[in-house]
Image 1 (cartoon, one colour):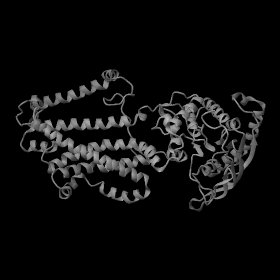
Image 2 (image 1 turned 180 degrees about the vertical axis):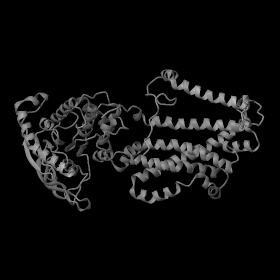
Image 3 (image 1 turned 45 degrees about the horizontal axis):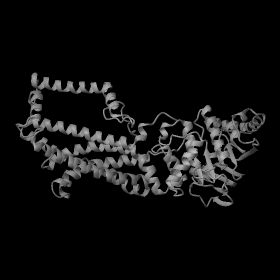
Image 4 (image 1 turned 30 degrees about the horizontal axis):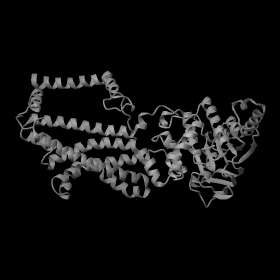
Length: 292
Length: 280
């Protein structure tokens, strides 16, 4: 079984014990070796790109957009292909994609956790729904694209629907695992202390399942971006996935790279946000010390 | 005396001819065989016996986590459990579990007040006042906002006992609560438990297989046989309270401890040999 991972010590977005002032956090990050290794690693990557494509013009790599040209295009007020930090189109694509990912993710979180909790809490509900879940879950999101386009009206809803689907199943399954992972002694203790069923749900099941739920949400966020791009390519009119394909189609390779880097950045920030919320909601986990 | 009322609200437990047979695939394992004894209101009763003698089965039947196959259990003269009736677990028979069951995702204070607040028996403010008072008495003032994961094993056990006592249960059920503690911590926590008991004499149903612990804490030690579990001997501990660790070296203590140890040794031997036979 997968174990929920504790935040890595010294990672850039790891939560420090609350009450530590910001400048001490900053100092701790600046002092950690991880930061400098990260900078070195990323720097080396860019250097290789520059050497292989711009300088050496190595076999096959010479077809790719150059490092310098891509950066120049990205920061240009008058980009050759119309997409840069200074054009409104760039932000339109970002906004379209963010809007789709976050509305799909929010819906998947809400429904996924609700259904997952119900499945873990009520045997009958589990018996009814688990076979369907296991039947639908293995179907790749890409296979849903035609059905989504037929079923959902307009161009926006199919994309949100497909993005939702990817996150939905992951969230259900991890929430269910989370409920199952709770030590039965907590249920006994709650009953012995006179908790109502609702009290058990709110104070035992939900917080007890939270570590697994957040593992699920992390995976779900990744799945959202994955299926967003796939469905934007299939049926979009704007958005980063749509634009990356357009750029390829019209041989605007620098734009393609800009969009890819943007997707990478937004994906990272999204995951970091999920981790941040996780640390906020699970303070008790960051303070666990070895004990009997 | 502000936190909890000193006078025990009943809590007399009567166990009459109780048997428990587990029957997975018709194997018919007899866990408890014709157990009968009484625990008076406010009495500290300790059950000792070798592993697998059905101590926990008996506790679970009182707590409402398990049924009995025959016989009946009465609490203050009223039928609590019989083959036809399994009581719902409730705050009048609070259990302190072997491996601890403080909710790790809640603060110490929340853990302590959750019983009365969830039952709607006390207002939050009222419960917090009681909780602070009780925590202070067991040397735990000022840890209200910490999480259980930040506490030592001994502190957790004390918090858990306080969490149980704040409910003013009729009977407190402790299932080898100090098993995981080291010897030094154990003796400190035992003293705290006795202090609380002297303050608020509740009926206590305490399970252990530590003979010294049993005699140190108990008014009455019940020695059980190995499977099938029967009552082998009931030994009264007539050592005056309050007791401190100095009692442990008194002649009377050693004499009673020796009685219990002699009684239980034969059973431990049998349990051991039965184990050997199973492997042979």
